[in-house]
Image (cartoon, rainbow, N blue to C red; front, side, top):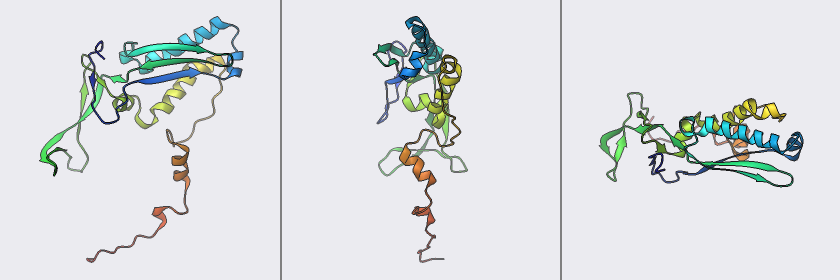
Length: 196
């Protein structure tokens, strides 16, 4: 953080260290002629990581990259700080809550107002803002798809088709999207207010 002069986004559950993992199964590794070719593959993985998660496309926010080799599998772990030069901040009003905290301003349509910040000399360490700048809700899925197209496809990796509009959801969340029986929304609306 001190090398980048980064400021911490001091929020409750802010994640300050992340890891990208690159690997494959036994069949994938059997397709390589020798260890040198595997090492070149991991170099390409690292270059991809720098391009996608590196601060200003450098490795300044990457703390460590480690190759773990076991008998049946190999992995490259890239540990990094989610530092971004762009982020949003709330525009606060002069109104205060019951507890005395300032409240966010809203526009005439009732939408919250934000300002965009850009600062390369004092970037922000923030997991949420880091991934918002890389696509928001679909950022992880997009990253995996880009990696397949740009790197692993050239090495013979296989990937299933990804046409799903539901991305970055758990199995339980996906099942809720497909439910129809027993949903709260299935019940007819009943107005029990005393005034019509």
